[in-house]
Length: 450
Ligand SMILES: [Zn+2]
Image 1 (cartoon, rainbow, N blue to C red):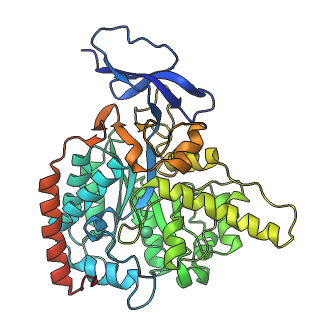
Image 2: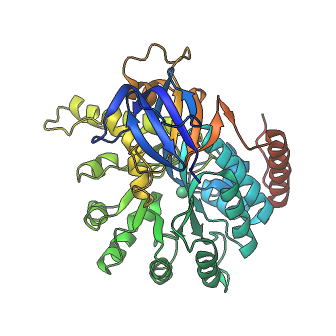
Image 3: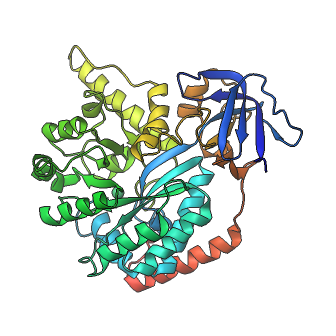
């Protein structure tokens, strides 16, 4: 049996792979789940191939969000004025009061709205940093939502933050890894969202990291977070030889220079959520500190309680900040300043660096023949963007989610002609409000007055 073929014709194609190049006009041939060719004037060679006209589109790799607490989808914008720390802060209100009120079905619905929002915004791969695993049923519910969404996703299993781990927690992790993730050749892969050494003891952190390595799972961990990040805890982990290239470090805002260097030297990857970091008091996003060592970060939304759900915001936020930091030094009379990030650097942070940070660079992040067909089509005929004079800058600075026309994951269309496929939005909306109402009532949290 031959696989389904799709020929995307006459788009402005940004492969973001230097060996393939970018094209003002070219075609992309999808064969089954994979990209089989990119270039001008391709033909599908068989009459059954579906042809898609992309003449008013930019065709590029889908965005990769490397750290999002997707279960918080039903709590969107609930805490935009919360800082991270303090009694009325995110850690206390969202993680200690609202999270414990979640039933498995609330985690399912929170995940679904988060995931469909991500697809709608052109994100094809997401790392679900899922610290809502109060019971085994919560885990099943979250995995079900990830599977239903059709996205490429890393399910990063996180212990609940509001209580001590269940006595069965480690057994659950082993069981899930075995039952749901025995193959790596699937859309959903496994990681451990480990409690960082700033949030628990050295021994407990070490134990979680060893569990991840026993299961051959990648690790994602929050470090350098606000005041807790200043205590040198990551350095202790480094001195104990626990930092390796299987780990993605999230935020890193208040780490010491030595700790930043340890991450780079051990081959770690980084996820920055610069909007959350700047707005909520994590500390100064360490973009320049990593660039000085030659490491570019991946980007992430973090929490929809506070932040918008798209990568356009993240790209612009990071680029603006990096420029501001350098210009500030220039205006202060400093010399020998580092180079500015340009649009190409930033779009790569939102795509291929994300693929690297999730261990998926062999599958996604560029439109390279042989990789999986995870791509998006962005409309260039809308009034917010025409005429397109520089396609990469147009994506980074000019576009927003209204330009996202089509989204494909592994060759499968999840959004076409500006509309999500495979989802009953009326039903989803009803479920989202039901779950939201239940969680709010049970937690005792009061929604803000308007
Ligand atoms: Zn986070």
